[in-house]
Amino acid sequence: GEDVEQSLFLSVREGDSSVINCTYTDSSSTYLYWYKQEPGAGLQLLTYIFSNMDMKQDQRLTVLLNKKDKHLSLRIADTQTGDSAIYFCAEESQGNLIFGKGTKLSVKP
Amino acid sequence: DTEVTQTPKHLVMGMTNKKSLKCEQHMGHRAMYWYKQKAKKPPELMFVYSYEKLSINESVPSRFSPECPNSSLLNLHLHALQPEDSALYLCASSLNTGGDEQYFGPGTRLTVT
Image 1 (tube, each protein chain N blue to C red):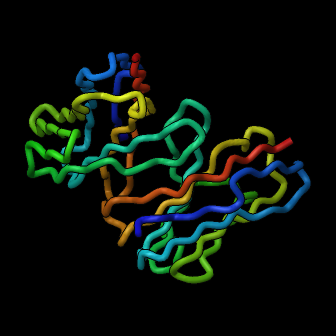
Image 2 (cartoon, helix red, strand yellow):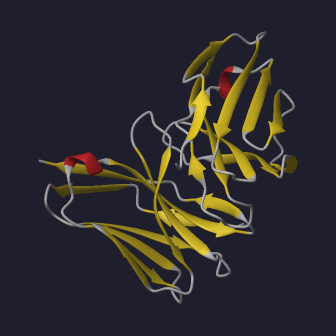
Image 3 (cartoon, rainbow over the protein chains, first blue to last red):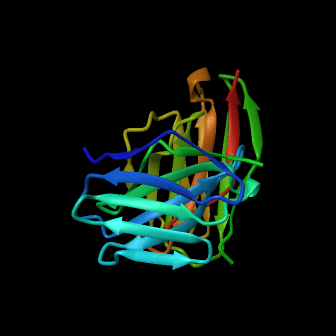
């Protein structure tokens, strides 16, 4: 079946950039998504990228897509303590979302 | 407005109880979803409704019974649950099925005793 892989943990200092990486398997995915989940909360849609794009920027967030390698990344510029959360990458596969296991981002002051 | 609301926020129920989870959206979305999320795991899809009709049931046990009374509401009826069913239950909606971005509610934290 389809699979999405992410590293489980990332620790950065406040003010640094964070880069969360993701690999996926479904080459026919039309959309790829990044969701953020804070403790005890639901998933917040951060951004998404259409499969025919290489890059999308939205304020502090930059998404890079390498379709050939099926690699997706989320860069958070000027990371703040409020960015501490779990970040899920998700690919759209046959109309459904396939989530990665999530990357826990810890931001140290 | 991209808000999906869910009630209750927390629910504790015994294995013989019957309870319902509720989800509501007013974005005009025609697709609604139930997910189950265990601690430190990604969400797992349970059910998909499209235009108020059940389109996907991911082999969910019959003790979970979904219902879509209208295009804005989605319920999940619970009966004879097991302790291992304790989890965060997330509702989501999207304009249509087929990959449109899904907006999630805050979830209901369910504990089965």
